Structure formats: structure tokens, C-alpha cells
Image (tube, rainbow, N blue to C red):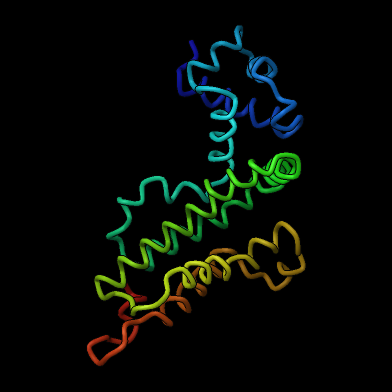
Length: 210
């Protein structure tokens, strides 16, 4: 007997195949059920409210960037270095499923602008919002110096884009052998060094060593 969690995963994998191959409009619940090996399409509605809900879940599954901000309250008290490394790793993990996932999002965004908006609001926008809130909390606690968190959140993400592009668009960037983890650690150190609180009470490297 198939466990409910396994059945749900089976549906999500089938939905991704159908959405990637036929687009949101072309894919049907009936077709997804057939790919998933379900006897009745109605079984999908046991796990997902409708096709749009299923599509959103597929995006969340295929874009690891969403995961660190699902429960922001659990990480707000963690030190800056740990939070930025977690967030950066999720962002760079996008490379693992990027080609097919990008095909799905970009293809649909051209035909349906609401898909692009849904992805941006559900992914990058949520991550930036989380980073802004987190950095603001660190300023209030005195761990980071006062600054415009809107700009710093964008700056951190921006520093990771070249590494992402090295896999997706510009493989020539990979010729120097720099790994994603090496780049992330260097970026995090540079980022936090620039936001160390000012004043004699702040010990060198205090922020980075936490």
C-alpha cells in the first residue's frame, strides 16, 4: 500500500513533468493523474485544492530558495553568519534543478505574467523580505550597525548572482575552480565585515566568529 507522503511526492513529480512539458494551461489534472499512475484524477484533490495550488507546490519543491523563509521565526535569533550561510546555500542549491525549473517558469511567465509575479512574490521577494526583517532585528540587538536593510539585502543576493550565472548562463566563470561554498563563505565574510558595529567596544572579527 502506498503511503500518503509517497503518494503526494508521486503527484508532485508527475505534475512537474506535465507542467514542464505542456505548460500550466496545457497540463490537466487528468493528465497529471495518468502520469502519476492514479486510478482516479479525483485523488489529486485529496492532497491539493486545485491546479493552481498544485502548481505553487511544484514551484516550492523545485526552488529550494523558498525553504529557509518558510518559518522565519525559528531563525531570527540565530547569529548573522549562520543565517546568511543557510540562505546563501539555499539560493545556490537552485542550480541542481535550474534548467527544467527555469524552462517551466520562464515559459509560463511569457504567456502568463501572473506566473512571473507569483514566482517573484513567492520566492525572491519572500527571501528579500526575510533578509530585511532579519537584518533589522540584528541592528536592534546591536550585532550589526544601522543601515538601510533594503539595500543590504539586495547587495547580499547580488553578490551570489555571478556564482549562479556560472552554472546557468556563463560556464566560463567556472574555469577558475571556485566552488559555490567557497564563494558563499567569502561573500558572507565581506558582507558582515562591512556591517560590523562601530565603536571601541566591538572586538575585531566578533561578528564573523559567531
